[in-house]
Structures are given as C-alpha cells and as structure tokens.
Amino acid sequence: MVSVAQAQLYFLALTRILAMMIAVPVLGGQSIPLQVRIGLGLILAAVLLPWQPLPPQTEWMDGLAYAVMIAREILIGTLAGFAARLTFGALQIAGEAMGLGSGFASSRLFNPAIAESSTALDQFFMMVVMLYFLVIDGHHLFLIGVKKTFDVLPLMAPLPLDRMDALMQTTAQLILAGVHLALPVMAALFLTDLTLGLLARVAPQVQVYFLGLPLKIGVSLIAMGMVILVGLPLIGNLYREIAPRMLSLIGN
Image (cartoon, rainbow, N blue to C red; front, side, top):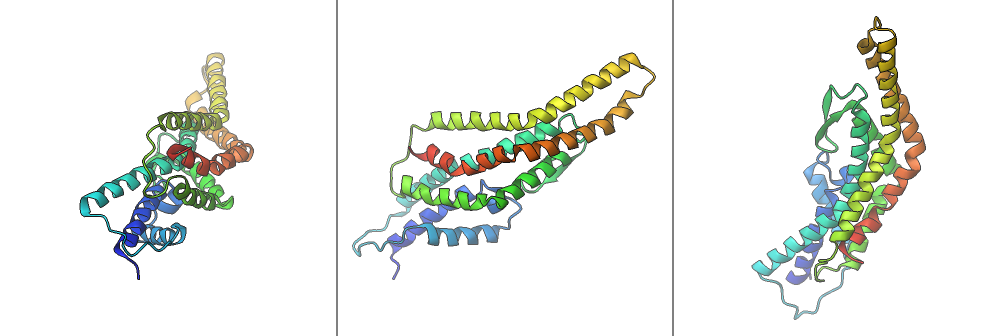
C-alpha cells in the first residue's frame, strides 16, 4: 500500500521532471499535446524515482510545507532544464544569425517547435538539428541527466545557492557556440554584399537589388548546407554535454 508520504515524494519528483521536460522541444515543447507531456512525466517519475518503502511511522507534510517543497522542485527543475534550453537556444541564435541577411528575413513564420516566429531558413535549420538530436539519441542523454539530478540533489536535500558563476559561464559558452556556427554563413553573405556594392560602383546600370536578392538566397542556402555538414560534430558535442551542464547548474 502506498502511503501519503510516498505519494508526496512521487509528486515532488513529477514536478521536477515536468519542469525539466519543458526545456526540450521534442519532449515537452508547445507542439507536444499537454496530455502526452503529463503522461510521459508520470511514466518517467515512476521509472526514475528510486522506489523505497518508507517506514510506517513516516509523517506526511502539511499543506504549507508541501507547497514550499513543490516550489523548490520547480526551481530545481527549471534551473536544470535551463541548461538544455540554452543548448537549443544557442542553435536558435545560429539559425537567426544565418537568416539575417539571407533574403528570408522579410517573411517570418510561426515555428511551433520553439513557439516563436522565425525565418524559413531558421526553421529549416532548427528542423535539421532537432532531427539530429533524435538521431544521436539526445533524448536518451537528456533522460540520463534527469535521472542523475536525483543522485546529485535528492528530493529533500538543501538548495544550491552558489551556482550563479556556473550559470553565467554556461550561458556565455553556448551563446558563443551559436555565433561560431553562424559565422561562415554571415561571412559568405558579407562577401556577397561587398561584391554587389563593388558591382554597383563599377556598373551602375546593373539592377543590384534584383540581382542580389536571389543571389543572397542561393549563397545562404549553400553556406548553411556546408555549415550543417561540417558543424554536425560540434552540434553533437553540444547535445552530449546537456546532462553534464544540467548537473553543473544544480550541484558539483
């Protein structure tokens, strides 16, 4: 028979897991139905939580104390999930930077995976990197990180209050990684603009605007294809480091 105290621990674990799942678009994004997200969280909580029978005399927490514990687990889950969200955010930064001068920026579409509007080039890039996330079993790596959070910071352990430096360092590193991914496309578009500017000076009769728009679209697509082919190892490393980043933000 499951005691009230054991049920409370289960729902605390469920709260932390759901808070972390929201950060991964392919598991808890806005495009995933709410019933699927909750059902997946219930299954993961039952599988990942070390199920140890509590002594019969264990007292259950009252309403106020339990509300504080729920808020604590939401904070821990959000902090750990922020590491995963930063990884996808870095790739989103790369996609946005690639689409700035590509000719696609004039038309923005709603992307349900990230619940934001973005260019067609950005959406294509995010679709490719999310498929690659599934190909390399990134969702399995994320679930391993979720399980290890309960080892690093158990349900009743005190909150870590000295992780601000790790948070700022992780944020800076991932933003830099996103910019590095976009640099080849940005450089190719800059050289294209420079060439078109020189052409306008040399041959003013050439309609540079009408020539440049399809040219920049073609250059951006070719450059992004090369970035995807060459940058897959870097993107894979970003995905493989999700679990260590999650643990670094909530504990040593």
